[in-house]
Amino acid sequence: MKIILTSDVKKLGKKGDVVDVADGYGRNFLVKQNLGVEATKRSMEILDRQNLQHELEEKELEAKAKEVAKQLEKITLEFTLKTGEGGKVFGGVSTKQIIEQLHKQFDIQVDKRKVLDTGHISSLGFSNVRIDLYKNKVIGTIKVHIQEQ
Image (cartoon, rainbow, N blue to C red; front, side, top):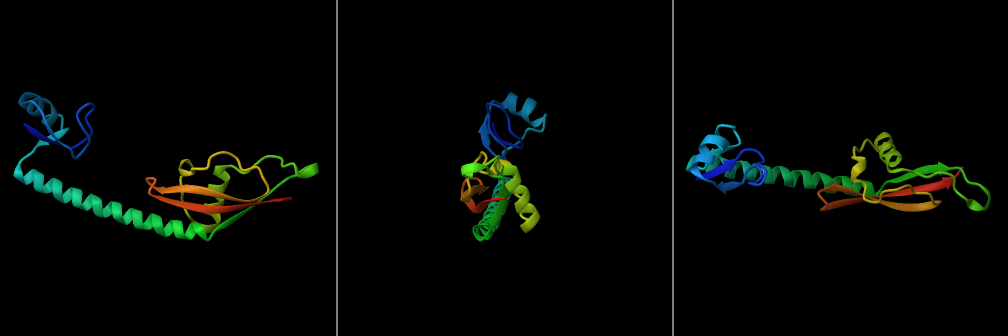
């Protein structure tokens, strides 16, 4: 029996997958628990339409991410840090501070876990910070300038 999964099922497949299962398992468990529907001609057409719509949405999200990446290339964030004798820097700039500054100044929302160059930036001058904007396909780069106070 062929079943279209309507949600992820452990050790069987992900939502939208068409799987071949035993008749009893399909009818008595997957369909009754609303984890899947029988793969008929009509349900396959609906699945194809949903997959097409999902692809269009993904392309739209990727296009938006590319626009944000172009915006990020033009941005330079400014930070000041205290320094001691010999140019020794006290503290550093965290990814959280970078993301907050990006949101305050340019109204660009990015999750701090998407920053690829993790860790504090604790050197004076310019640094590049890479941000994953869309599933490791679109990566934007921000310039961060750190100067002494």
